[in-house]
Image (cartoon, rainbow, N blue to C red):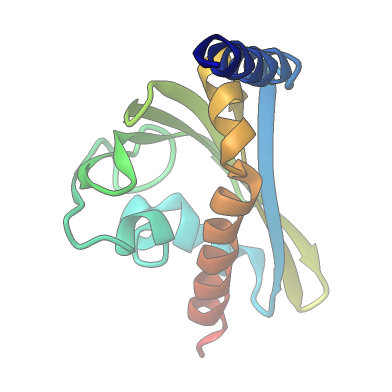
Length: 174
């Protein structure tokens, strides 16, 4: 009987590992919102990491999180090192910025080492702007295995939705 249980358990583990191995080598999470504000107003709330962290749900969601800014106030080179909270430990750095696009590198150290690209695209639509918040990166085997049990798109995407709603509220205030 114990041998049968062990064989069934081993087969189950092997099936999960085999399934994880078939998952994509990269991931992408993206959410969009339409904001009744010009791109310049939104760009100012994204391109300056101090302003960004007033609505960033990963930063404002945990009072234990601590952080330190370095580099320029805004734009390429602006850096925020964070840690101590539920979002983990890492660094967010602006790589490049135009009036309609901000690209950042998110280097996570904890809970798991990862280097991801975070982008904000601002597409003018008359008196409004379509804002897309996107993150993409490599999906190593451990990440694939974790994603078998946790839906990263729903988990991170939900945070993006919350952040975009807060960004919208801040940008639409007159």
